[in-house]
Image (tube, rainbow, N blue to C red; front, top):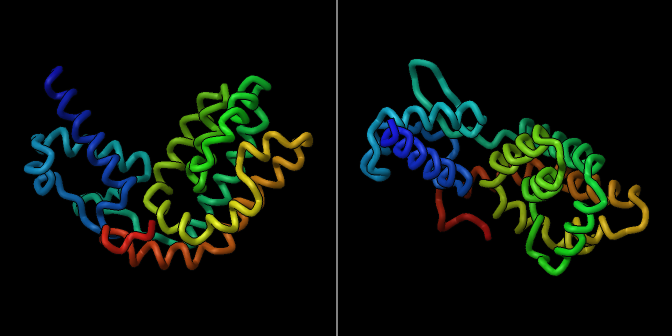
Amino acid sequence: MADHSRAFGKAYRALHADLRSGRFAPGTRIAASDLGPRLQVSATPIREALSRLAGQSLLIDRPAIGYFVPTVDPIELKDIYAFAATLALGALGTLTEGAIAGLVKSRSERSRHRTAGELVRAIGSASPNLVLQKVAVNIDDRLARLSGVETHMLLAADQSEGNLEDWLAWPSRRQTVQGINRFYRRRILAVMEIASTASRALGNPDNIVT
């Protein structure tokens, strides 16, 4: 039992990292039998890991056909960005003064929270609400493979308006809300370009924009 649990954990961690990084092209069928040699894990724990990842919306389970990497659908992506904005603002309302102070102290780490997923995960992780934490992590997982494209396209515009730590340091919480809203609004407005660029780049590491 312990060996099976370790095998499942190994398969899950490896596949989770693969999906976050965009190792597999959108629409790719993922078969346990193909993964065994690379992961050095038997098919059963790999199938269990694939099922877990499908439950987290990182894969699509088509019964009797197999597991597939989701395509980059601009309509779905727009909805995820909108939900991430709502979630981030909801989590913001649960932050204690201590949590806010902790985030503000990290202002020197300018490379953090550059993407839609990173931002909602940062705010959600600081929330005492465990459900918010879990959902924020999942949103980050689902958006992670787009991070290179998103950063390349929007980093300059983002930097011109500051980042999370700057917004939290503003005296008015209304300004913080406006900063977060503008951050996600930029992504919603650019969703077609983000989706089309990511669809071309994903699955081909040499073409992924960084």
